[in-house]
Length: 286
Image 1 (cartoon, one colour):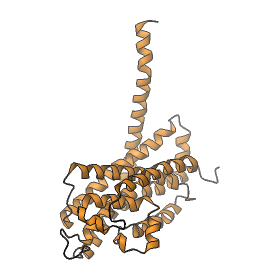
Image 2: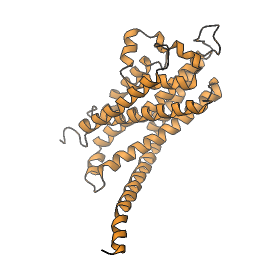
Image 3: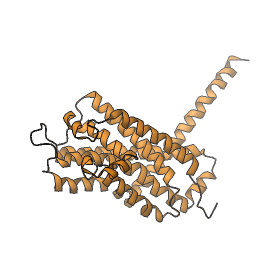
């Protein structure tokens, strides 16, 4: 066998990998452009969390939730901001995909994708890349508003930035996979918002987004602890709130080890649910 032949055979897998990566990037670009051109999705996914932050932050801006003698003090608006960042991640992952995929299924877009030579994984890769870009934009917008209006302090150590990174990434993966899996629940595209939005609101109200988590009823805390949003909020509080505030948590600490385990478990569970429950066609099409 000649050296030239060996070089060609060695190069073939590299070409395939580059081609697959190019397809995924191209699909991600298409998904992102389609999202930006849909004003309803743009407002609901990116701007709605910012509007909620401004409204609730203005209402509770002067409310102190730590004991009077504790230094530094934490306002309810600062506490609320950490939950809204987690909610922004959930909105770009879970809500966005659980609503848009049924619409695409109803319109026959998924059926046409399945009928093309394009590998199926490229479609999902495009969705994931789009969600990652949207989540980045959403988090930057929320942080900018929080720093400008509510005196939120950005992480001042490398360890806190690292915690912020892994909580956000694990939370985004879990929400994205759950959004893809949950997209099979809505029977029609029109039913998507009606099915998904109440679930998102219930999770926000019970996970310590709009209210201080340890003030919620015990049964509500137990319910919220089953889902990723509560743990995302808790992990982000460890990043943006003082270390002394950990004593205000239900367990008396931020429990970052448990946060990582729960979010990782939801990533695995979400992947299993995707493999089992994702549908390319409507039920009437079979």
